[in-house]
Image (tube, rainbow, N blue to C red; front, top):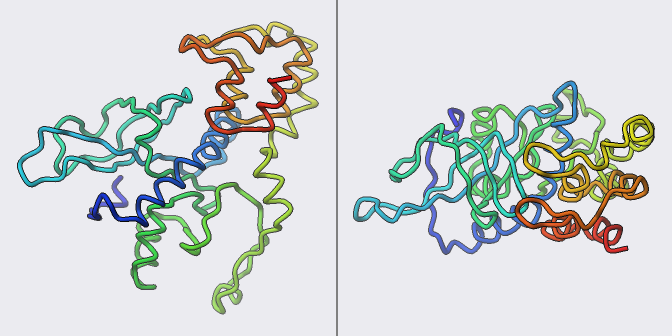
Length: 272
């Protein structure tokens, strides 16, 4: 992306970077859940959303790196693979280029970021890199990205509203306060999912075909919400007769999809 022209080189066996990428893959489900609700919003809520993916090219010039981690936007995901549009020009690789449509396994994910109201969420490898910068370098980095990454040692993965601290508060280093109970609740269930319950019930009374209809990719609403971890929606769909045994064209049931991302509360609903 144009805001991040500088290339950061690191050893593939850098233990901190390996751990950061592992955490990004582990928490990717929160990125996907947020993106699933962004698709339902009439007014967009996200300033930015992208995933960093490791690309490999065995035919690079001798001595050049054969792997580059680059950002992809326009993300779609089926629980097995991630799809989107490459948003960087590679420095060394020749088998991909900026603007290419890509499809890579979930294991290729090395980071993810979404931003709400100028605040970045996720960004594990980005924050590791920031942690190795001076304060002035961090400020310049964040200004280039156009978003606030916060403390590199305190990465948030779900949006939680905070009270603004004001100019004097920022001047004296005061941080916005996040209610731990609200964070815990939002980790378990997206607020939009809870708020949608009543309107979904009404919509299903009017259009029962919503339960059985499939989209252009052959997925039902139950498939989509199982992958996104939307337990409230899943529960209502099941109560209205949604079939938990139906499979996607890739062969996944709603339970399989919830299990891929480790949504245990959704898996429990579907198992029953």
